[in-house]
Image (tube, rainbow, N blue to C red):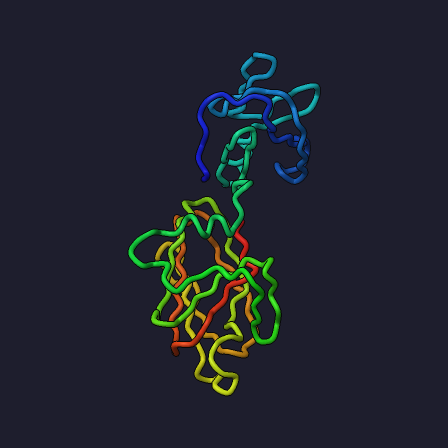
Length: 233
């Protein structure tokens, strides 16, 4: 999980910026130096370096602390062991986040499954290596799930479509579903999808959002709505 780590961490990576006559972050690079990071304070050779207002110099190279870099980019800083992550935490895949961070209230995850095999949408194959979330009607006319992003992500993107397993090809017109995407409780997107319809790209702006919710309303009892190629950044 993404938690700030308080305490002493030694030998970590910090961000190196070329601080010159170009705007901040116009040119960036990374470099490893040995340092101690104590509650987001930097020590070089035992001496505390002030990083609150400007970069500091080591061997003629200008550095800025990872914490300050994160603040300047408007992103969160996460620390795990000897790693510092700005934005999405390293080691936690999108799929891991989506299977661990949903709101566990009642039967909210009913009818929602992770597909481990290949799926087809309008004849297009999406392999098992994709991140595939499937919403199934069955006894559930409406599937809904709420994810707790807590400001840690900027975007959610995926390919949306109705799985070719849905109903009969002779009944494509009535095999449809309505998909709603909410960000912090406000409706951001509403899409109606049919069996045989070309898949569509979905993108949500999650910057600063504490949560987003997906709801799928099925028209029939034999439809499968897939979100595949899911990415969160």
